[in-house]
Amino acid sequence: MAGADVTQIINAINAGDLRASDELLPLVYQELRQLALSRMAAEKAGQTLQPTALVHEAYLRLVGRPDAKWDGRGHFFAAAAEAMRRILIERARRRNALKHGGGKQRVELERLEVADEQRADELLALDEALDELEKHDPDAARLVKLRYFAGLSHQEAAEAMGVSRRVADRLWALARAWLYQRIADDPRS
Image (cartoon, rainbow, N blue to C red; front, side, top):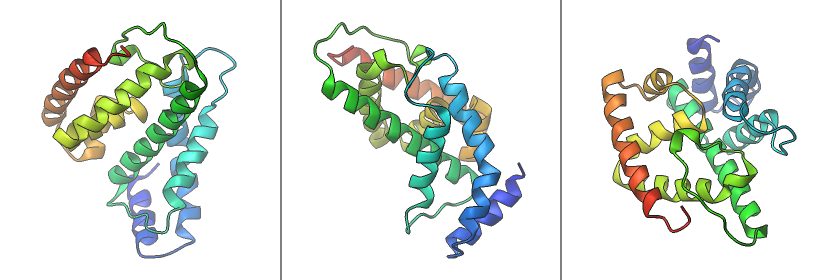
């Protein structure tokens, strides 16, 4: 996919061209689907949430808003990561509302699988900690969202944010320490 094409279409959408969103989906669909697939590859067979459904719902949330504006490709994929995050969090909250009891255990951030039926508590704890981190350091929170929820590599996330690898390294170290502390202090962990 050509980044320049995506940027041009995003600029057309921002300028009010309603047909441009129809042109955007074919360009970003495979990349969004790959991101969703990579996040869900380790899941058990028979999951109710499929990568295609996650991509479609996230895309509809992105382009379905009349006030949707993106400052280029990186901003679009950050918004897609946030949309996927919100979908997964809403799903975990719905499951948790139906669930009774605990059996909770702490799980490392890198090992947490976002669509795992058994991980709703950990995902909710991560979401709350991420909300706190966003108030403290929005860039560090954005990096986590791009890496964790959108499935971007460290380098891809740095490029999407428009920062150097060194800045991304610093943000990732801060985010991991912050989230580890908050999740460790969470009574659900």
